[in-house]
Image 1 (cartoon, helix red, strand yellow):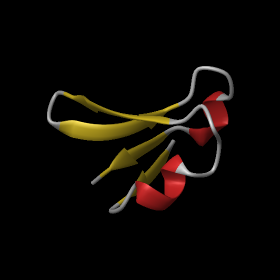
Image 2 (cartoon, rainbow, N blue to C red):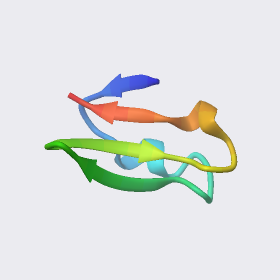
Image 3 (tube, rainbow, N blue to C red):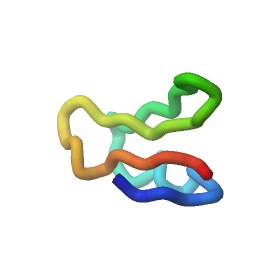
Image 4 (tube, helix red, strand yellow):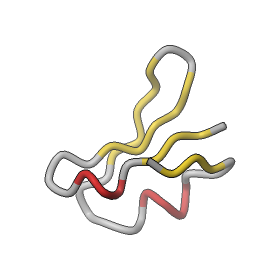
Length: 41
């Protein structure tokens, strides 16, 4: 999982990427290809 300050560019790497908020953190998740996971902060 990548940790980045900005997730806007990471969301555009794959068409199935979604930006979600969990426990105050912002995550990029991808059900079909988990190697695109990322977290903000």
